[in-house]
Length: 146
Image (cartoon, rainbow, N blue to C red):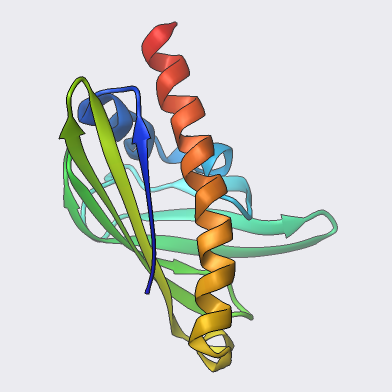
C-alpha cells in the first residue's frame, strides 16, 4: 500500500466539496483526462464516475466506484483503468488547526498492475499521489480563498 499525506489550507468540509464534485476529478487526479458522466448519487456508496485516462488519441474509458463514503472525512474507491487493472484508493480527511491533513492510500487490487513488484508499484504510486495531493490542494485552497 502506498501512502501519501499533505496538509491543505482548507477545512475538511471545503476539501470534501472538491471530492464531492465528480466533474472536478480530472483537475486533481493524475492520469484522469476527462469526465464522461457523473452518477447523480456521487459521492454516495455505489455511485460511479465515468472517466477517461491517458492522452488523446490513446484514451481509455473507464470508471471509479465509491465503496464507502463518510462526508467530510473519508472516501474509499475502486478505480478502474484497464488494461492496467484496478486500484483500491482510500482518502482520509483529518482536521488540523484551521486546515486538513489529507491522506491517500492506494494499491493495485486486480489486473496486470498486481504483477508489478510491490516496491516498484508503490514508488510509482507515491510519486503520482504526491502530485495528486498537490493538485487537490490547489483546487481546495483556491476555492477557499476566492
